[in-house]
Structure formats: structure tokens, C-alpha cells
Image (cartoon, rainbow, N blue to C red; front, side, top):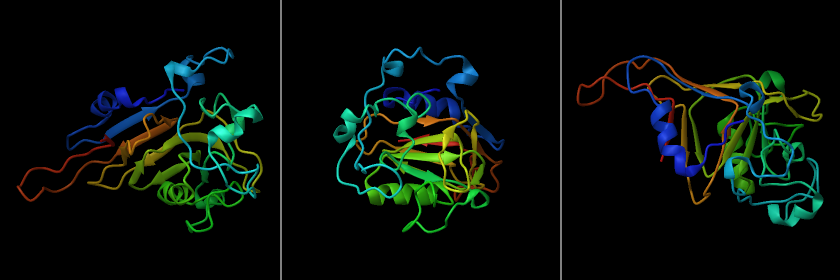
Length: 226
């Protein structure tokens, strides 16, 4: 799994963004697909430092939220790692869940975000995470057509998601995000987070159409980091 570190994000954005009439495509692959998974040694991946997180539950979808990642350090779950390496992070303690409507996604940010009631879009998941003070979004594999803006949040795709609300597992199967025409598919803002990840996504910007107010052709842009 690749880890998008803040110091390298501007370079990453420049590589991923396509300023042209043609379509722009970004691919964030998994470590299993790229033969880059580290040994199980407890060493932080790519020098990654821990992500801040706003809330902690007592466990499971129905837990109460009353603390941060540090409060569960003695549980044996390492919040400085990523879900493909530390499966115990795939929990409402650490983030919110997103799945397509066909996989049980719910179109209501006020009630969605758990495994049993995942949000139906990534944008709804971001709203739910923001309201709960969480910094991770777990996305079931599938195709999502929307423009997403994330402020200081990490985005993890490629999960198998049982429609009965059972255990989600990392499947290393990339999730597809396609932006609307003439809109940026994914906009990332640091928002004081320091480091954040976008993993196991294929992000596409369709062909741009029309011109701007100055008469210049519109751009096709998959990812913007600012």
C-alpha cells in the first residue's frame, strides 16, 4: 500500500493531475499488488508518523465516543499503521464506513457511518467523519461518481463489505472514484493533520467540456492537493 505523506503530496498531485481535454487518471495501489508490503516487524511504514484522530469508542458500531487514538494504545491496536497492516483499525473507533447503495449504503449523514449502516457516498462519509471528529474513511470496493473534498482525513479503499453489517476485510481491490465533468474528483486539504493517506483508489477525471470565462478550454483534473 502506498502512503501519501504531506511532504510529497504536491509532487504527487502534479503527477496525478492532467491539465488537458483528455481524461486524467490516478491510481493508488495496494502493497500486495505492488510487492511492497513490509515484514511484520512493527516498524512504521515509509517513516509514517501517527495520524491524529478525534474519537474513541468502547468497541464495535454501538460504542460510545469519548477520546482519541492514544486512549486505546493499550488495546494492542497500533493507530500509526494502516488498515491493510493493522486490521483492528477497521472499526468505528477509528473511522467511518462507506459503501454503495447496492452494498447497503445509507444516504443520510446523520445516521450513517457504521458497518451496519455505511454512508452511501464518500462525501457523506466525510461529513459523518467530520461531525464525529474522526480522520479515517473506509470505503467498500465499487464505483463512486462524485466530487470529494477532504480536510485532514485519510481515505482507504479496497474493502470487502458484507451487506449484513459483518466484519469488513481488506481485499486489496481498488475502489473507483470518478469525478463529474469539469470538476476535480478529489481535493485534499491538510487542515493541520500533518500526514494523511489515500490508498487503494483509482481516481479518474472525465474529458473536460466547454470553455471558461476567458475562453480557455476547461481542464480535466483528477486530484488536487492544497
